[in-house]
Image (cartoon, rainbow, N blue to C red; front, side, top):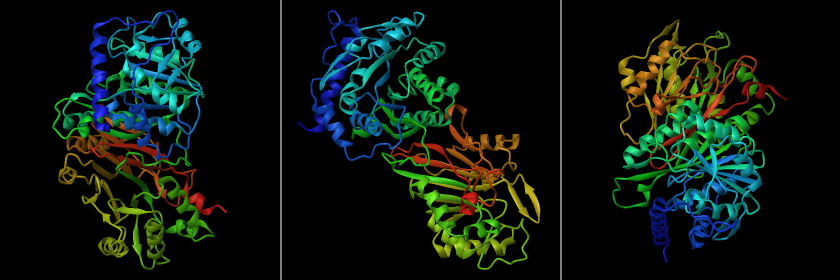
Length: 565
């Protein structure tokens, strides 16, 4: 039997179970018996796990994952579990929609175990009993899990990847609201600990053609990246997800208990599985939750491309002196490549590149030596240099021309005011609202420049790399807020700012997730110590269908690192 035919049969089996489940009351096994086997063909799951066998798991302990429950996307389910498989867990909490609306109360759980296609899966009856005993009547014991694929499709993967773990299934009713979700989060906080993995079994956009679903998916991705509970609670069900409640509860738990953030590693739509146009599709995400530190191995998994955007960089003044110290260049390059895993980097280059920098040049005229600058840009994996900033014209047109010449000769692409850098899968346009050429000039971004941000292809994300703001202030002014809205109306996907020399690392989802904004990246390689400045990289993961996920990666102070012995 072919893999495609097996998947078709699996979907057909699921559909048949759905029809029966909607019409029949939950079936309870006799006494305290386990729920009987739901899926009968182990090959459905073995093939899925074979597809990800060679993939590298996370080297940092995950505290949660989100995976689909449609076996059409079987590889994605396996991918999420494989990513978490480098560590052991005693308990796995499964958050799932109550697909067939069998729960009388907002939530349901069970103390029964499950018979699975690979063998029995034990329920953590003590933890489930704690939920039932201390819930104030909003969680019920239910047999709805007998046929609900939201939980049953997870169990074969749990049995294989985490055979020693006990499960606590929780079904979330469509009738529940945000007040209920908050109560569930508080109840789960009593049983979720460092030995617990939270598995959210959720599919995303439903019943829409792919080109429409993609827009809803991007809104969800942006809201996840921003981590705003209010924005997550405002998502629409089922246009964004089949359980907004599960997404809200899970994200809130991860933030409150672990300080964990999301990393989306796959974004797909069921249209990809059919050669024919499908008017009603389902979208799938695979999301990992953790505290991803500087040693995180950050495998590419399903990303088509991964880029990093960096803030203010200058290789002159005191930075030059620091980099020429013993081992300094190697320390800085090693730190950067350790964070990017040597993936392409786009840098905001502050100042002018010269073959020879005059000794008498004043400190506020930023100039850097060509040999050192080009060596460092190449060593850190620079794929593009932004020149739309307030120091690119410090030595006028001739200095700017010299900078472009040096970059062109080195084969490093650059982009200035209103110019676009076309990368595989992504367009980045540089704009600056600040200039310094003898005297400061501001409010330089005109409607004409804004119009250049309009993308030529709706599927390619459009990034505005913007130089704006006030030094050492990360909050946007009314001017920046107005520019942000003007960019959103031109369908800009992502706004990334620089100039303030500091960052709060905060991503903001505008207008329900229509656009994602990082007001300031802060410094990258710049001669200001940690006491005065801070910086972050922005990681942008692109997926085949044209969606993307962004997250900030904290930077050590590279000036201090260069000076260290």
